[in-house]
Every structure is written in structure tokens, then in C-alpha cells.
Length: 191
Image (cartoon, rainbow, N blue to C red; front, side, top):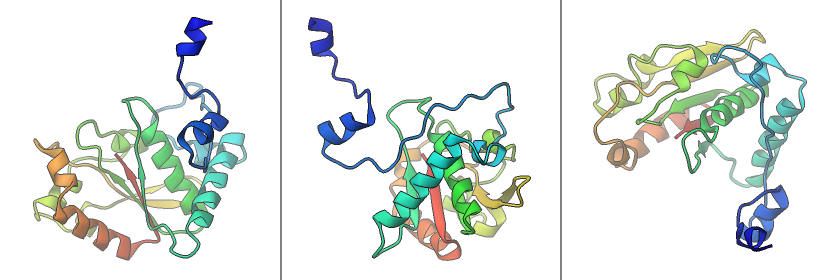
């Protein structure tokens, strides 16, 4: 009884609403890789699965959560390494693209970037080059396309900087985000 009493973890979706007092906008179940290579987006590979339907439900809830002022920039973050931030960010970007939206996926995890490995793209240039003004947005943007004729614009992290927190919290980052948001319908940021 004592162990159960001291356990303050959130186990079911209703615990989130009860403890935090905020509504739950989506719930994504664990996804099994089943030996599939890392460079794979689940909603593209399994478009009729319950997980893909959960991502579509999340997309719809995000769209309805901001009816008066549509969400243009979505940040995906988590408390720990391995929480599934990149998985959620890439699949969320793909599900928005499947709905016909122009989507930009940014890898802003400037400590342990993984979007480029997940999508199987190059990471030679990216966000850090935008901060240094050495390249413009178009020069660092890559296209990732699935077999379902869906395309996502991607800006990988680029080289790892010594001061990621200062870069991401800067006014330069605000200008970069404003420029990117003006080019697409939705920006999804993996952090």
C-alpha cells in the first residue's frame, strides 16, 4: 500500500487531465518497429493503422484547438532522451503533409540531432548555418518524400554548436522561424 501511495506517475490519459488540469489533445500508443530500418515514417508505412489514426486525430485536435488563430508552429519536446520526440515530430509532419499542407520539419535538437538519421537525409548543412548567415533557408532545405507521393521540407540541425540554448533562444531564431513560417502552412520543430 505504501509503494502504491508514493507512486505519483501518470499511468492513464485521465491522470493527465486530473493532475495537471489541462485537456489531453492526443494519445499515441507505442509503435513497434518490427525490424524496419530507422529511416521510416510510421504513418507513411502503415497509413491505415490505429497509430496513424491517432496521429490524424491529434492533427484534427490541434487544428480545432486554434480555430481563431491557426497553429503555424508546433514544438515537440519531452522530459528525457528517448521519449519519442523525433518519432512524434516526423509522424506529425507527415500526417499534416498527407492532409495537403505545406510542411517544414526543423531539427532543433542541437545536442543530439536525429531527424536526418530517421529520414535518411544528409546533415552537412542545416539550422546552424542559418544562425551564422552563411546560407539561406532554401540552401539548407531538403525534401523528403514517401512512397505515397507526400513530401515534407526538412531542415536538419547541421553541425553541432557549442551554445545551442543561446542560439535557440535568440532573436535570430525568432527571425528564422518567421521567415520559415511565411513559406509553409505548418512548421514542426523537433527539440
